Length: 114
Image 1 (cartoon, helix red, strand yellow):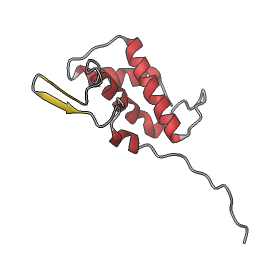
Image 2: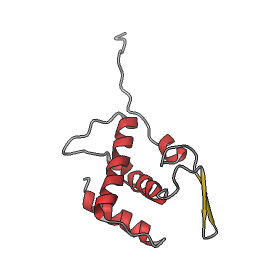
Image 3: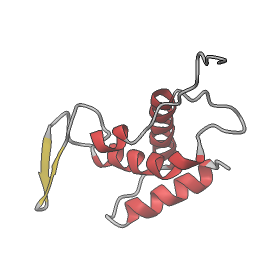
Image 4: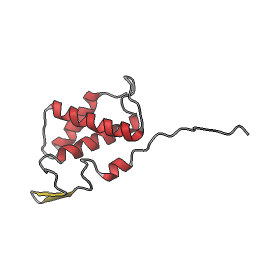
């Protein structure tokens, strides 16, 4: 079951590894933005019970981390700080690899009744 508190705690732990801390409001915003992108690409209509499908929980955290790590790059396509270089694949705060891992839902529109 989806729990924003759990997602936020996991994101905080991941960011603390590289010494980054942000207010919960910012973390919630990035988690929500990632959730919206996943749901839109997935074509999932969120409900109270299932705001995000379970198989995308870890991807949501990874995408929120990517967006936060881009703070301060001001639209750059690459960034180097303290000897650590980062190249961004697009204007999106999310990597193409992450976006390509989201599979749209499909359904049968017509089935012949042989």
